[in-house]
Length: 137
Image 1: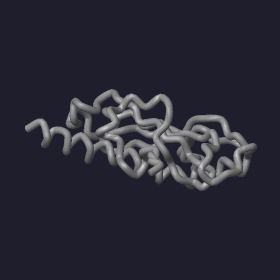
Image 2: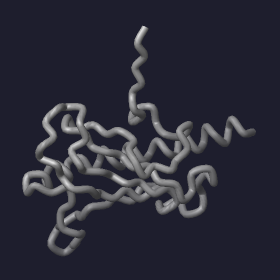
Image 3: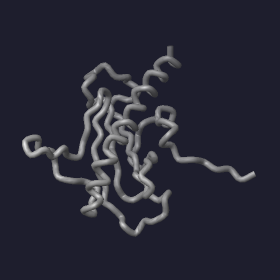
């Protein structure tokens, strides 16, 4: 059963990357004004805001844009913070990730990598956003 519980938690945590990917366009639009975050949501005026709610988590844009970063693999200062357990599924989420955060740093090339502030256990962080480890042989 523990392996199954880990599988469920990993699959639910993977939603965080999908939520972050959905915020990329908003971040790109905000960067045109030199900021990571844009105006807060205002439905009547059509402003969508800085967050998205998924089934298992809530993703929020944060951070301060650093225009001095130019290398593709450097963080640009923008972040997406996903808090698990604040989605539409309510308490139907794995207890292994409830209340945990996955903080994704956006790189200059637009991709994301898990960053400081993440308290989600490493085994639940999706491989797509784990820092790559290189070994010299």
